[in-house]
Length: 194
Image (cartoon, rainbow, N blue to C red; front, top):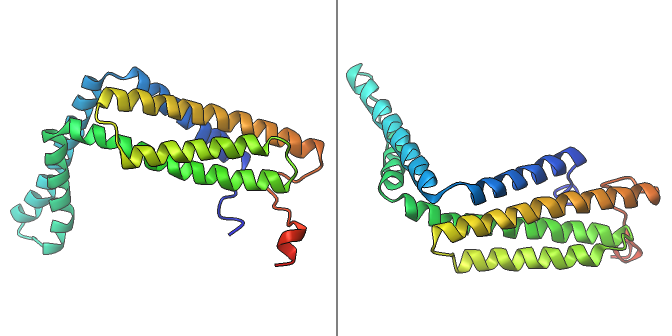
């Protein structure tokens, strides 16, 4: 379990930069551009489904297992082309799930910070709780306006990326200053008696 949430520096930096870029993209892109992109993706999925159905029918090599690919492609493609706004508003729940997952990761990291006597572990714990609560709210009560979802999600992703970068940098400095091997989990007296 101790190794489950362990990340190395490169993974943390790449993930943080990805969050920042996605946040900027969410804030900059116009809703009409996103709706058009979703419709195009839906059209491509329909074409893939029809192509995977037509080729075996034309070559007389039809197998029922091909329907495993064809049916989901056509159904998802039809949904995306017919209702791109519905798909985009579902992004609120997706962003909420990402925020819940990140809140859990930050809770785990906060525990490691506390065990390693990192003086700012309480700030990380508060941030983790805030991210977790916002994520739960987005999952339970999704925002209906696509524009609001995109801007709000963009802001959250940028904040997440910046906070993760700064927190990681500060923790690495703490580890260097206290001769702690970064990412190592130090068992406390409480844990050894269990």
